[in-house]
Amino acid sequence: METASDTGPLGVECLAASDNSEGSREDLDRYVLRAVANAIAISPAGSRVDHAKLSKFLADNIGRLLKKKKLNFEPILQAVLKVRGVNERDLYIATLNLGEQLHQKGVEMPEPQFSLSHRARAELLEEAHAATEAVRHAQQAKRLHTAVKDLTHQRIGDLLVQEGLVNEEQISEALKAQEDTGNRLGTNLVQLGYLSAEDLASFLGQQLGLPFLLDIDQVSEAAVASIPQELAIKHQVMPVALQGRSLTLAMVDPTDLDAIDELSFRTDTTIHPVVAPELCVLYAHARHYHVGHQARFFLRDPATPGGSGVGAVSAPSQELDPHREAPHHGTDGLQHLSRALLRAERPEHVLKLLNRYMYNYFSTCAVYLVEGDRVRGWIHLGAKISPEAFSLAELPIRVHPLIQDGARSGKIYRGPGSFEVGSFWLTESLGLGRAAFISLIPIIDHERKVTAFLLGHGTRKGGKVHRTAGTNLQAVATSALTMVEWKRRLRAAAGDTSDETEAPTKR
Image (cartoon, rainbow, N blue to C red):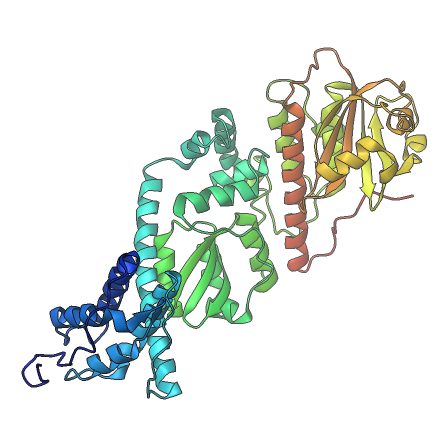
């Protein structure tokens, strides 16, 4: 038998002969042996332990140490603690990690008895967490730098086309709009209705391997206080959460690594970027920093000196004339509609423009408003019924199959307006025949709720509608209503109540 003085660093007796007669447990034995040896090797004690002797000690005693998938680590701990220069602090975290690793394999390992105080244990856990976070942040920063480098090698527009989110014509239209708005390409695509804010943020998040936010209503005061207003505006960022020295930061451009480095230095924190749409960040600035922004989401007026024609978001807008603003039918009609919708300030502006657009293709079109559990007529064009009479048409949603299904699913319907007994209300409200063929498009607002229905009947000369037109129009409508809501929030956050969004007048 060797003694501590002549056996080297480990210096312990074998507990008993190995008992590995059960061949079925050989794989488990090998796994536990490797796990224990590795846990000690990567611990602060690892440089002092003779690993060959440690491995022999474990192999010789595995039959006594591991019984019925339960590892007794106490003898191993006491053996390693006999090595000169090794103490409990060196082995505490390694022991906890080993227990968790073995637990995932179905092996129980009761925590051995450490004499460390609760304060010492807490300090070790905090140090281990900080070290893990530092490694994770370094890996994240390296990955983000690589992703940004890869992204800059390809145009974002090209990647959006490759993903099938937009087409080449829509990219060209958005690039032209940059001359009018000065916005980023992605923001223009959202405002033109070609791309939803959610899809844009999700796309950037996937490209960069980052999470994305669509709502920055919930932020901590400590986070807001960590970044001065001027820096938040300069870098188009919004601090969201601050935990210790970890700062979650919503960014319009998470590829701006210089901004991340500057803000990390200024705040003495580790920055965890998340992607957020531009208008979402602007709204958060107005709400949490109490500042107004230039309304960059308005089209610029070339007639204005300097070509900007934009003022603060609180500036009241002029009432839009839907008959003048809406486009005539043509291959670029939806693009013209999107441009007109960029200037819309209220939901009723959006609905009027959509109705006028429909009138380019249908001989009769109308807007029905959803108000709680009821639907009512609001405006129409081309129907053989007076606007006053149409505005009196009202019905509980639950009694009309088409409306009930549309309000629940948001799906577009094309077919007979009256296919069941008692479902004549839609066609009769417009003075149409009961068997009239209609297109019924649910309009979905920023909260993903059906807020209105567009109805079209009869085809105008030269106004044939493609099968995908309704889907495209629905997407444009949702985007427009979302932009209107963001504008309202920005005005409200900036303290302007002179042009509050109002629902269409009720009777």
